[in-house]
Length: 116
Image (cartoon, rainbow, N blue to C red):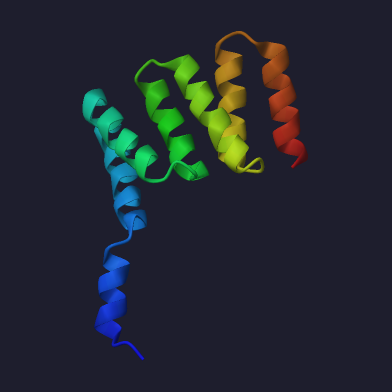
């Protein structure tokens, strides 16, 4: 049986906690207006966990805050490919489509999200 400190040491090497910190830091940078730092942090998180719907959705939100609407939608769609039932991403896509004037597509997305 391995000692507890070995398991703690191995857990400390995991990228997941760092990725979570990067996402939270990126959100904080957006809130403070530092879009360049936010983009860099969320890119690091995305590279570390490209199969995370949560990271993809937050990447979409950060890209939106940076004015990259089409890239934001693509990232949110990636989140939905990873987790089709991820309600925050479903609602974000619907809202973005609505803001772009794509009312019919937005309404379909809202209906689909509500039916979940």
